[in-house]
Length: 478
Image (cartoon, rainbow, N blue to C red):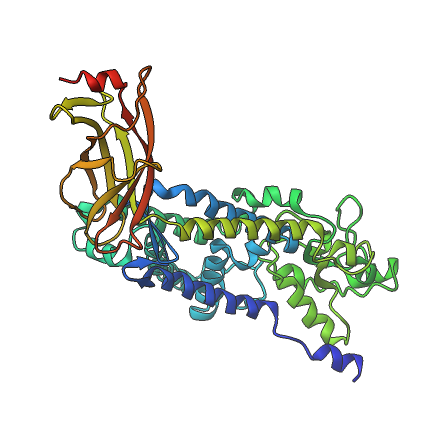
């Protein structure tokens, strides 16, 4: 196979791969809020009902100790992606980029024909023409509709979609929710239509920290000056705009100075200038150079590679270097911890406090029997979506089994979903547990609380104490 034939056989351009990935991400973001099992969502952070749904398990707001781990997973994943692939998150995952591609490439270019070519992102439409003004109005109108869908989709991760559409019937009763939707739509309209890629360049904080994360093996869109020639000097000033001038200074330079890589760039940079803050690793410039150089039977001058491989020419890119392995290890550890904490979820919440004002009460029942009571306040919450009947057992230390009993409540009680149940609990003993004539004795006990209709799943254990008085107080009890 000749060089020309070799270059002509190319894989799918990165632009189309991004489009496919955007379609996948869009579909997943729209579908995920609707996925439920037994009323539990795949992911839902409900401020309305104060619940967190994660992997079809429902957590109460008191169990939001999981949220820091979720945030750590998010940020460490993004940082790891940056170390490995530069601003690949910006070009391939970020909603800002996806929305801009939908608006600019799909709506303005393909649907209404306001822009003539997707590959020319530098030439803005002539808005002095009436025809273009009409096309612009149509494009903005379409985007407003899509913005409402996107804003509603965002809210579905905080308000279940089934509730969201119910609330639509009474919007005045849910002003915060629908006000948030309207504000989000207004932001998307301003951001995507007016601010454009200036958001990536001037507003997004992520671009400011990327340089700290990069190393010589970080993969990004890189121009090869050894083959193409130095278009810019060491001070980043442009030296050549025409191929003949470049060839006069460097006869071996392969760059044609066509600037296809410049006109296709959504953030309006020249990749031949070197690493720049504005580059979002969309790889449009790679596709452009592949096309131009392919017609000449040559390999692209711009590749998705590392400075070590292209600029410094010190060998192949090391993808699995210690830094990347470290990120992977941290992500695995956090994921395992999150999984363990998620699988040990308690399906009821229980706080036990001793009743204020008294440690115990002593009452003589007969000459030989003295009744010693301890009072507690149980605060129980059913975190499931259906009501349950609850009761509990007292687990006493060895040698005292069965001697500490429940006086109140005398029967199981019902707790409804998402409500807190306050119960005054009295434990008692009518046997001599400890004969200590110097001080009261604190006896550790365990409370086993459970749902009568699901003892295996809905059960929690809480540590508490039973205070038994000095033996002289017991003997002289009235």
